[in-house]
Length: 135
Image (cartoon, rainbow, N blue to C red; front, top):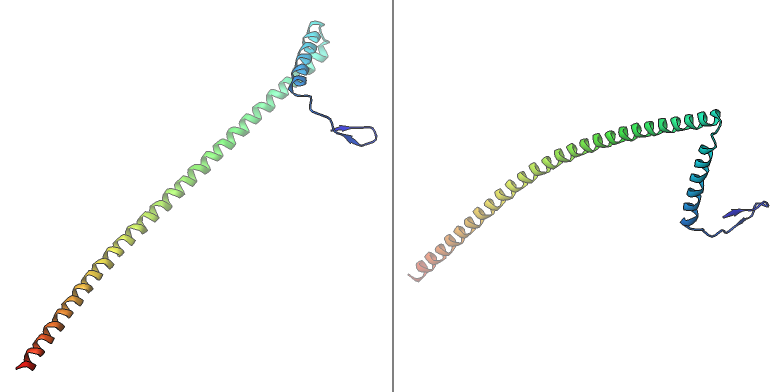
């Protein structure tokens, strides 16, 4: 958008990347022109100081980024350790559940065998009763 004097903003179409590149070329030309015309020592000193400040800011940013990276790695490591501990607990619980399931299956088999035995005994008793009644 373009801000007019009356405060009304008008829509302004993007001029594309070509203008950006043209501006970069223009800036480079201005810089080389200034250098070739021997700027005053005050201006050169100011540019030098700005460059030093920028490098200092970059160094601070690098340090901060490295600090954040270390923090992230520490947190990731702690999280991985927590996940491993929880996984181990889950595996132990699963092993206990498997043992319980095996015990239940064994009990079920025993009960079925007992019921079969009882049915056989009942059948035998019925047969014996029928034999006695026939006599």
